[in-house]
Amino acid sequence: MATDRAALLKAFDESRTGVRGLVESGSGVSSVPDLFVHPDPYASAPLAPPGISIPIVDLSLPAPLAARGGGGGGRPQLGLLPPQRAALYGRDAAGGGGVNYYSNIDLYRSPAASWRDSIRVELDPNRRPDPFRMPHACLADVPGWDAHATAVARAVLGLLSEGFGVAPPELEEMSCLEGKVMFCHYYPACPEPERTVGIVAHTDAGVLTVLAQNGVGGLQVKHTDADGRDQWVDVKPVPGALVINVGDLLQIMSNDKYNSVEHRVIMNAQDKARVSIAIFFTPGKKGDSVLYGPLPELVSSGNPPKYRNFTMSEFLETILRARPCEQGLN
Ligand SMILES: O=C(O)CCC(=O)C(=O)O
Ligand SMILES: [Fe+2]
Image (tube, rainbow, N blue to C red; front, side, top):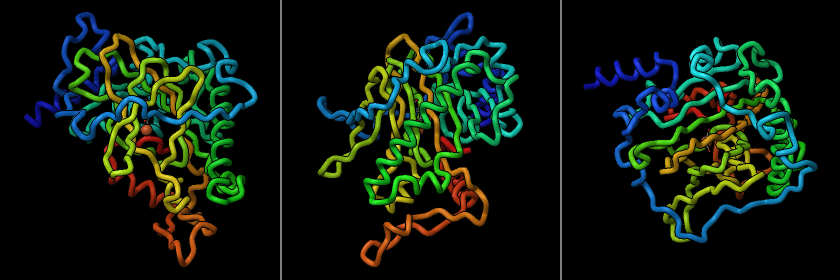
């Protein structure tokens, strides 16, 4: 049985066309193939009652998102043809010239695959993607989107720093916005949405995530109510709004003043694909002499550090060992 699964995974991976390829193949799929079936995917916690929603903050940045970039409303599209997807297919970030397309980063490690394909684009200024591998549709839009998402991340990180009493430039001076990677996720319409998930529950590992989603919905965050009960809250798509996630590193740096939020993407019965574009911000300084941990200003004898200091290599190693999916790491 296990060998069957391994062989099926390999065949799926070697088709190099992802879940989208399954859905768009001549005969399509009328059920979720076994590889993608999650046992009882929605059992972990109930949905929040209506009325509980995610706060929306108007940052009044100088220009709205839709005014940025070129075609496609300023957002990169995943409108790649199967041969283009196959040519970019592969999980080896180092060998991919900074642009990779694949289905499920953790395909061979997770107990069940998720209903999602992704394209990963390196945005680190020192490791720009190979323009010849960059999908044509992304070439024009990515720089504008990167600049805009970074401006939003800078504004939010500044406000969060003020919130815990640290001068706004400090985290940026620590290079917190310099390690950048973009993931565009494509969640095809699903014939049996209750049997699989788009992305399993996780927290983002880095400092901050800035995410744009199309109108399909499915993103949920876990909220613990005053009585300690967990509930999943829908992050409903709001035109022009971006979703900001606090990541594990910011939780650590804030000594738990901010929590990295657990989230997931569920499938729904709509016949439209969900598309999301996330930029993950992590520290750019990764050398072994650079330590990260709770900011010294935030710890005292009354509030001792909840984490020890560590290098980025230590952090990445721990995360890679412990996680089902390594979202947002570069
Ligand atoms: O597609 C989404 O809305 C969520 C994606 C996500 O959580 C991630 O890439 O870490
Ligand atoms: Fe995430």
